Length: 151
Ligand code: FES
Image (tube, rainbow, N blue to C red):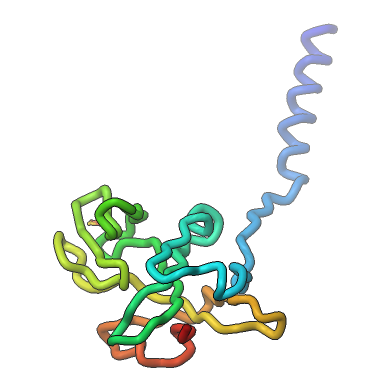
C-alpha cells in the first residue's frame, strides 16, 4: 500500500509539473541608467552587464564627447566581453578579440565593432536605453543621433 501511495505521489508531482506554465522572464527592452552627470568622461559603467547585456560609456567618438550603450556580445562568435579597466579596453575571453573603449575592434578575429543600442534623454532627464534598436558602425549607423547622447 505504501508503495502504491508513493507511486501516486510521484505521478501527481510529475503531472503537476506540466500544469505550471514554464515562464521565461526577459529583462525589459527599455530601461533607465541614471543621469548624464552620473557618467564622468572616461567612465565605463559595468553594472548593466549581467541583466541587460550593456556597457554604458562616456567616451570620445569622432572628436565628440558622447554617452553611448555598447552591447557586451563579441562580434566574432558571440561570447560576452569583459571590461579591462587597467588596459582601457574590452576583451573577449574566447578567442582574444580586443575592442577600444569606443567599441572599435583592434585585435583578434572579431570582424567588426561592438554594436550600439539606442539611447536618449527621457522626460525625467535620465538616460534611457532601448535594446530593440541596434546601430552598427560598419553600416555608418553610429552617426545616427539616436545612437548616442552628446555631453
Ligand atoms: S567570440 Fe570573441 S573572439 Fe571569438
